[in-house]
Length: 439
Ligand SMILES: Cc1cc2nc3c(=O)[nH]c(=O)nc-3n(C[C@H](O)[C@H](O)[C@H](O)COP(=O)(O)OP(=O)(O)OC[C@H]3O[C@@H](n4cnc5c(N)ncnc54)[C@H](O)[C@@H]3O)c2cc1C
Image (cartoon, rainbow, N blue to C red; front, side, top):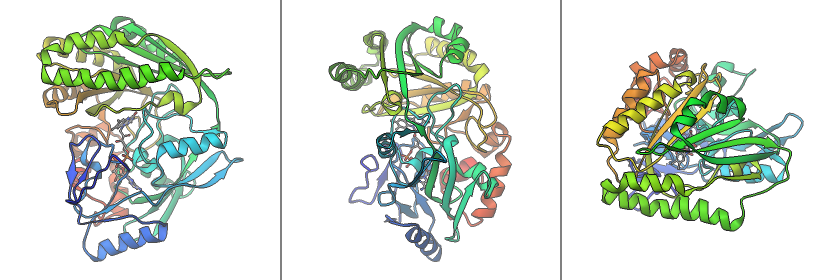
C-alpha cells in the first residue's frame, strides 16, 4: 500500500498529498470476524471507523480521526464461479492483483479506469470508471456485496437479496458499512485493439457523437493553450495479439508520459510563462500508434507524475458545449495549465449515487501538477460544470454540498434514508460525508 503513507508521526496522507488525517488508531483485520470486532470495539470506545484503500482519492472521503481500517490483510480471491461468470474477492484486493489473477484464469473485467493501483472496495466506493459506450463503471460490474454494518453484523446484498442496499452500497462512499468482499461479473478474457491518434480540438468536438457511437471505448485528452488533442479508441478484436513493443512502450509510456512529462511539469511550475510552449510540444510528442492486447494492458498505464484532479460528469449531450466553454475560459484567462484535460463517457447505470445514475454521461477531468495552485482553475471549471448539471466524482476535488447534490441526484433521499437506517449514529461518518450527505 505504498501510496498511503503512515509515518512515525501517525499521520495518514493520500496519494496526492493534499489530504492528511490523524487517526486515533490503525487496525489491519485479517477476516470478516476481526472486522466485525473492530467495528464493535470502536463503538464501545465511542470512536468512528473508516476503511481506506490505497489513498488515491483527492477528497477527504477516506480521512478519519477515529479507527483507520487498513485493507492489507483482507486480500485475495475467495471464489471463482465459471458457470455464473463471477469472481468473489476480499475487499482490500488491489485491482492490479485482481486483473493479473483473472488473466491467469482466462477471465477479465469488462471495463476499468486508467490505473489499477486502487483496492476493489476503494475504487468502487467512489464510482471509479473508465470510458465506455455500453459498459459502465467498475461498481456497475458488481453482482454481490458483503459488508459489516454499524452494529458489527454481516449483511449480504445483490439484485435479489436486500436490493435497496445493493442499489446504494455499490458506490457507498464508505458511508453504509465496511465492505468485506465483492462479487464481480467476469467474462472470458478478450483482446482489445487500441488506436491512439492526434486530432484537432475542432475535429474531435464536431465528431464527438460519431466517435462515441462507433467505438466501444472512446476517450481523448485536450491540451490547454493549444487546439490539439490525443484520442484513444479501444475496440474488441479477434487478434492476433500485438502488444506495444518493449522499447517503444518504455520510450512512450515511461520516458515521455512519465519521465519527460515530470520534468516539463516542474519547469512549468517554476516558470508558468513556459507552459503554453510546453503544451504545444507535449501535445505533438506522442505519435499515432495501434496495438492489441488483453484488457487491463490496454485500459491502464502507470501514472507516476503526481497531480491534483477535479472531475465532473455532465449529461452526455452537454459534453461538447461544456468543453468549448472550458476552452474559452482558459483562453481568455491568465491561467497556465500544464496538464491535459481528459474526456470519457459512460452509459446510464442503476446505482443510487453513481455519477452516471440514470443518465448517459460524459466526464471532464481537469488536473494540475502537484504543488501548483489549482484553486482558481478548478473553481472556474467547476462553475462551468455545475451550470450543466454536473455531478462531481466523489473521490476528486470539488466544493459541492448536500444541498447541491440533492438536486443533482434524483435518488439522493433514497441513499440518506438507507444511511439513517444502517448507520444512525454515524459510526462511518467523517467531515467529508457530513458536507456531501448532510448531518
Ligand atoms: C493516479 C490516479 C488515477 C486515477 N484514475 C481514475 C480513473 O481512471 N477513473 C476514476 O474514476 N477515478 C480515478 N482515480 C480516482 C480513484 O480511483 C478513486 O479516488 C478511488 O476511490 C481510490 O481508491 P482507493 O483504493 O485508493 O480508495 P481510497 O481513496 O483510500 O478510499 C476511497 C473511499 O473508499 C472507501 N473504502 C475503502 N475501502 C472500503 C471498504 N472496505 N468498505 C467500504 N468503504 C471503503 C473509503 O472509506 C473512501 O470513502 C484516480 C486517482 C489517481 C490518484
